[in-house]
Image 1: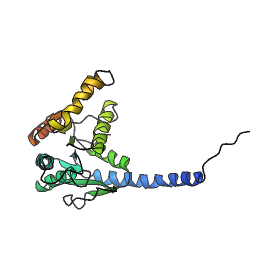
Image 2: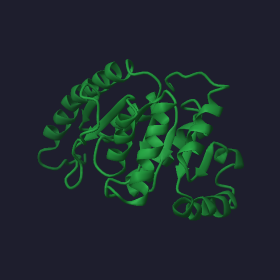
Image 3: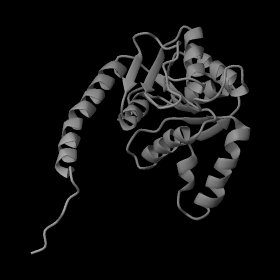
Image 4: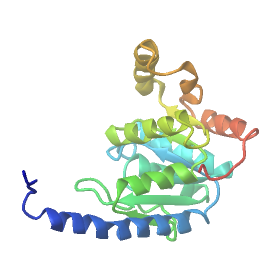
Length: 228
């Protein structure tokens, strides 16, 4: 009879994986308790590498400020760049400023514009992403990199598959996003890999006023509540 062989230390790995469940559960419980008390919010995403004073940093400040003035809180990933700009805009407007921070090797650190009682730290990306999706009434997506695209397409996928309720997804920066969306329409849609209705909630804009108009218009017909 042939015996299955496992690498040295395999049992130790399985044991560590089992114990990790408690840490994961703890992050979920802590996140749910903190976020459920915050109220309606809009998440602002974008590159951690965008510098203060640049076009999109200052636009993100204006967008977040307008969102806060409209009565919504602002959630970001808690770090520098566009995340900092989002929290700064909310802070300047006197609105709720939330940071869902995660430790990264090169570029992540808490920014100074997060409300002191609304900075939440995570070790697991997937737990952090659940918090964004569950407690956001909209995604505002500024120019960014792979992480920004990951968050954008996860939200689209969850809406497409009816795993969460619909909410507005707003891409800010026509010159940055048009090429990607054109490819999605011409290639993905053209090949029949998605339906035209999958793109209905995605809007591309260039101003803070347009962002708020889209969010407000959507919630004239939808409840402000957690998404699942």
